[in-house]
Image (cartoon, rainbow, N blue to C red; front, side, top):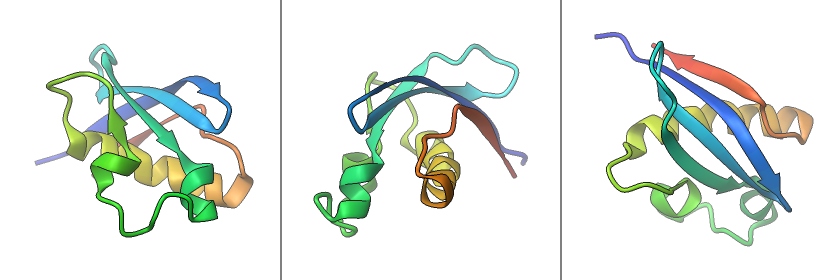
Length: 91
């Protein structure tokens, strides 16, 4: 079974980014927030559960989809120091 997730940056407030995400070719209605500066500085522990790192903003959104988007965003952030504006996860 193929997995196709798209995401896009909605806003950055301080070091916290808000993303919209969802399945490819569908409306991106799910939302999550992430603060990678806190994670990289150690303020947020590397041992924290993913739902404390990738915070869903709507009930019913799928944590697993948000986590996959996060993996792409985190890799880009580590390389550039900037949040990724849009992208996807395809497997």
